[in-house]
Image (cartoon, rainbow, N blue to C red; front, side, top):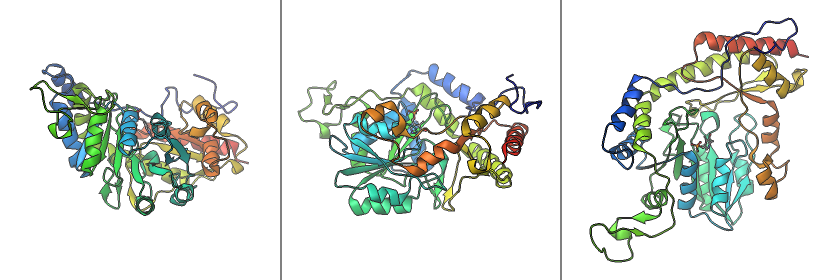
Length: 397
Ligand SMILES: *Cc1c(COP(=O)(O)O)cnc(C)c1O
C-alpha cells in the first residue's frame, strides 16, 4: 500500500479498485466450452447467430461481426468510400481508433470540438468543419451517452455525408427510445473486456443499407466473394470464388462469438446496475463543491461505460495529476479517458497542433475515470465516493 495522500491520513481501502472489469458467469464459460467441443472454431454457426442477435437487439437490418472495434471502424470507413483526399470529422476525446480509421484509407481526420457539458462532439462544431472534401462523420457516444443524433443526421443529410456512430461505449443505450445501432448509416461496436459486453476481443458494424452491407462483408474477408452476382467471371465449379476487391482478414472466431452471445443475454442486467451506480455517483458528487457532473441529455437513456469525475480546478489547490495519485494512494486506481487524439506524436508529425479544440483540451486537464462496472459492490462504490469527498475537502481552496 502506498502512503496516503493526506499527511497522517489512512487510505480508504487496502485492496485496490480499478476503473473497469469484465463480468463472466457459468453460462459464459459453458458457451465457450460448447464452441470448443463443436465442429467449428471459426466461420461456423455462431457468427450468423451473433449477427442475428445484434439485429434483434438494435432493430438494425444487417450486422457484420469482425475481429475488434478498430477493424469495424476500418471497414466502415472503406464502405463509406473514404479515400485519398477525403476528410472525416470526429472528436478528439476518444480512443485513437476513431480517427485512425481515416488514416488507414489515406483520408484526413478533422477534429471538431466537444460540447463542454455533455463532452460529446458538438454538432455546431461539425458544421463549421465541413468542406467539399468531407465524406464521413465518426461521432463517438462518449461514456455511453448518445450524441445529439437528430442534429448530426440533419447536418449530414444536408451535405450528403455518411454517418458512422462509434458505439464502442454505448451498446444498450437508447436515443429518443431508439436503440443505438440504427441512428447512423453505420454503427460500430467493440467487445474488448473493458467495454460493457465482451468476447475477449470482437467488433461489429450495423447498418440498414444493403449496399453498405455488401461492402462490409467483402472487406471483412479479403474482398473475396462466392456470390455469383458480384463476380466478374463465370464460375469454374463448386470450389470457385473471386477476390473482387482488396479486403482483410478481420473475421472473428466462433469462440468469441459464442461468448458475446452469452454476454448479450446479460445486457439488461448490466445496464440496470450501471445506471444504478451512475445515479449514486451523480447524486453524491452534485452535492460536492469542487467537482463537476457530466450532463446527461434527456433524449439519451444511457448504458454508461465510463464514469468521468471532472475536477473544478479553480476551487482546488491541486492539479489532476496530484489528485489522480492521491486517489491511487487511497486504493482507487483511476484512469484518464482520453488524451486528445491530436496530441499524439503521430498526429503531430501529420501537422496537427495543440489549440485545435479548446473545450476538449480543457476537459482533458480536469478528468479522471472512476471505477464503473457490473461487479462493483455498493460498499466498494461507497469507498470511492468517500475517497473523492475526503480529497476534495482536503484540497479545497
Ligand atoms: C475501445 C474503443 C475502440 C476500439 O475498439 P477495439 O475493440 O479495442 O479495437 C474504438 N473507439 C472507442 C471509442 C473505443 O472506446
